[in-house]
Amino acid sequence: MIGSINPVRVLTMMMLATLCACAASTVEVRGSYPSPTIQRIPLTLGVYYSDALRNYTYTERSQTGDDEYYVESGQTHMELFNTVLPAMFENVVLLDDPAQADAMGVDAIFTPSIDEFQLGMPQKTRLEAYEVWVKYNMRLTGPDGSYIADWVMTAYGNATVGGLSTAESGINDAAVAALRDLASNFSISFTAVPDVRDWLARRT
Amino acid sequence: MNTIRTGCTLAHSRIWPALCVLLLAGLSACTSTTIDEFRQAETGISNDETVVILGRRQGAGYETAADFVQCVGDRMGRGRDGLSVVPEQQFVDALFPWFEPRTAPLRSDDLQQLMAQPMVSEKMSQFGIRYIVWLDGQTETTNRMGSISCTVGPGGGGCFGFGSWEDDSSFEARIWDVSSHTAVGTISADANGQSYMPAVFVPIPLLARVEANACNSLADQLKLFVQGG
Image 1 (tube, each protein chain N blue to C red):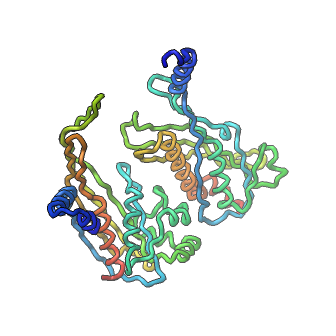
Image 2: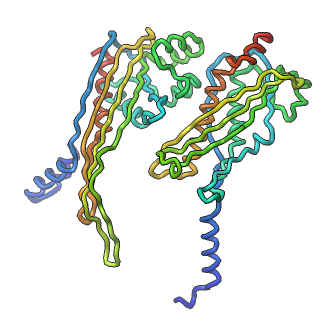
Image 3: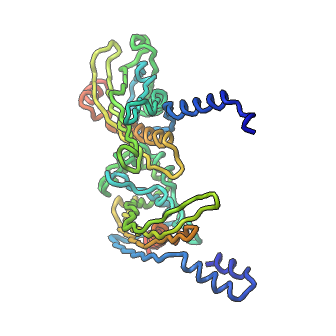
C-alpha cells in the first residue's frame, strides 16, 4: 500500500498546501446600493473616476507584516456613485478624461478619491465585528478645471462576526456598510458644503 | 407543548410518558420577563394602515440586532388580529438615505421636519405607514461559570463538566404616530434567565429562551398598544 504512494507527488501537494495557507486572500467588494429619495439638482454633472479610484486596493497585513487580505473596492465605488449621482442631478455624464468636459456641456466635474482605508479585524480589535473606515476627498471643479469645492468625507461600516460566515464575507459586508454610509451622508450633505452651496446659489 | 404530547404518546410503556415529560420540562431553563408600558396618546389602526419596526443603530457600543427586529415584526403580523408590518430593509431602502444609522430621525420633532419633504411623505403614503416603532436594546451574556472538557481517543470520545451563564435582554420600543408626527408611547421589555450545560459524555444544553421571550412579549404588547387596547 505504502509502495504505491509517489513521494514526489506527496511532497508537491504538501508544498502547494503550505503555499495556499500562506497566500493572501483577495476580497472583491460587491454590494448593491439603493437610489436616494431626494430632490434632483437641475444641472449636468460630469464624473471622472481616476485610475487610482478605479483600481483601488487596500492591503491588510498580518501582525508579522505579511500580506493577509487584498480588499479591491474600486469597482463597487464606481457602482455606488453611478447609482447615487443620477438621483442627485438632472443629468450625469461619465468622463474618460476631464478635458472632455467642455465638449460634453457639463456644469461641473466631480472627482472622488480615496485618501485612506482602514480595516478592523476581530482578532486584532478583540471586538465581535469587522470594521471599515474610509476617508475620501471629494473635488468639484468647473468644466475648465477651475476650483468650485474640495472637501473631506469619512465613512464607517461594520459587520458582526457570524457563526458560519468567513472573514472574506465579513470584510465585504463591513465595506458595503461603509459605502452605504458614504452614500447617505454624501447625498444629504452635498448641498450643505459651503463652497458647493455658494456655487449652486449662483447657478440655480 | 404539542410536540411534547406527540412525542410521549408514541411510547408504549406507561413509565416512558412520565420520564419524557420530566426530561423535556428539565430541558427548558426558566426565564422571567417584565413588560412596562407608558402611553402618551390614544392609538388605533385601520386595515389599510401599516406599521414599520426599525432598529436603532446609532450607539457606538451596540446595535439592535436585525433578527430581533424581524422577530418582533413577524410576531406582530401573525394571527387573526395580525397587523400589516413593512419589512425593515424594504422600508429603509425605499426611503434611503433618511433612515440610515447616521441620518435617521432621533426625536419625533425630527420626523415632522422629514415629513415636510414631499418625496418622503409620498413614499410613506405609498407604504401606508401609520406607526414607526423604534427598537433599541440588546441581549448580554454574563456570569459565565464552570468548564467542560472533551477528549477523543482511539476507543471513542466524550465530554465531562458543567457550565452555566445568564442572559439578560433589555429592549425599549418607542412608538411614533406618523399621522400626527408625535411620540405616542414607550414599551420596555426586560427578560433574563439562566442557561445550563451539563456534560456527561454528551453536552446537554438547557437553554433559557431569553431573547425569544422578550421578542414575543414585546410584540404582543406592541400589537395591543397600536390597536388601542
